[in-house]
Image (tube, rainbow, N blue to C red):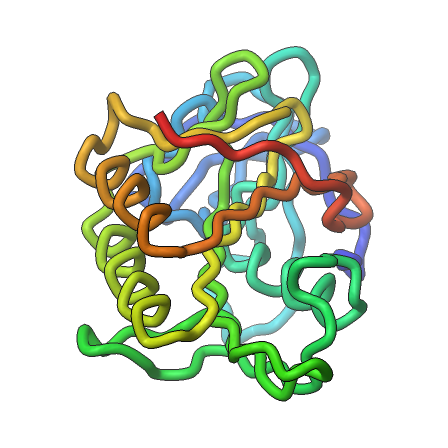
Length: 237
């Protein structure tokens, strides 16, 4: 995925009211940027960090700037925009770059499903070899402890619901896939964040037992583009 414009480097000052971040631009101007992330952003919101924002000239927008990237520990880059992972994963699936999800002739986004009235990020159907439809839920991973990626970065009842829905699909004979899009270039493996949300970790263990598939892929990130780079290990604890 190309950003489509040159991102502007700045310095992160503070995040507040969840969706607002004050950024100092190279000329010293301080602007308020949209923060497209509802999580805690642990490890990604340290004042003084280098960040990159996109600029928009649409007069209908309340905020001209959107926070996209941050430089974290050891110079790694993380994408904090949680609207992008679905697109990044969808592009990779459509291009046939994820072997476990290749061979499907039809790719749909935001399809309603399940008893808890969810929307699946990607529904894959019409497989060339007749494999069952695949329900793919995408999660963004930016929380790191050294090279270990952890999800979630805050208690997530919504994420717990998504696992239950996937478990139901697996029980019905469909493929159910939880896909961790690792938007942090320093992460080499992923685990559930037991200390943050033990209930979510428990649902992960139960989901593995009933056939839900777990995939983790790390993204290559630069101020120009973000693309899925390679698979990395995922393990339950």
